[in-house]
Image 1 (cartoon, rainbow, N blue to C red):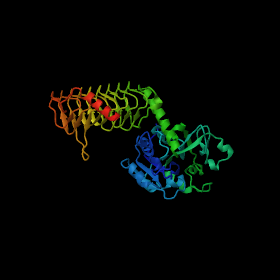
Image 2: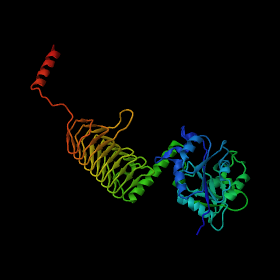
Image 3: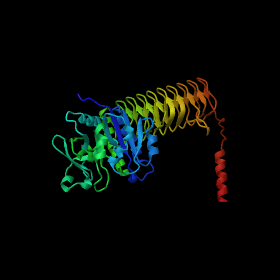
Length: 448
């Protein structure tokens, strides 16, 4: 068995990100509703690192705020002098640390904890390589650095594309930039590399080619080390993530009627026998139990849905929506910070916010809870089995008792007791023949 030494992680995020053309730091652009950097830190967390260092250049404040609470500390690379120089900026943050060091990139967000662990395991094998490099074989090798290795995965040469010969550029094994090194070696090796290359920079991969012990390469799939340097690459990584998440959902017993039109967040939780119709979008914080149907064109965020419920089409669930067993949220209904208990129904054209809707209650079309007075939010409480007639306005704070009926078109400003009828509208009056007389009068005026 491989013995795991203490772990430190260095995440490089000092690039300018100019091709993103954004005031937002490059590594904070989201994939599946989560910043790229936090995808990486979440995977790292599974390995329980002793220390985490994020190396930044410009935009320190944004990154510092994003990693607050993760245990990561910030190191600053004031001048962009290459990846080797960037790693060296973590020296003080790792003072006194003895163990293994993983070097990752904040704009390479999808590398898994399993792949990271495989790198560390290879570093700890009996031949104890100086470093372990993560390689991959993309369809288009483009301008990636190349790795020349023997059949055992021992590296004979690593070279940046701009410094490579034609023969070296023909090699398909490329360098992802990710690396595992022992802490006792890392900074000694960095001190030994130079910047005699086309860019005049200190390249991290150069530590592999220093005299002495050999380094090793392990391979992973190209999608896992896809980097993001532009909006187009961001969209490509998002698309790949979504494709894989859809396949995972279907493998786990979810029906996606038109998979390519459904978009998940990084933390979407789905039960079995869930059916999701076309053009459904999940924001963060959605949990769905078994046997739920999400009809087309619905948007869900921060919501929990119990078994047997039906949502949509064209429904919007906002944060705090809790939909009970076999409840129904119909077309053009918005639910925000509200509980629908078992069997409750809000079927058409309604807004229910800051509310409780009791079990088996029925909310008629066009009903709204008036929860905001321009300064504060107030709660509406609708009892079990209550019936709210169409086009009613419930002005919070207000309570509708169990089994009460609110007549259509009512504006309710006071509590309604259980099993009562609430009728808030003027008496209907019909004036016989008035409409005919009115039309005749107006037509005569028009002719004149």
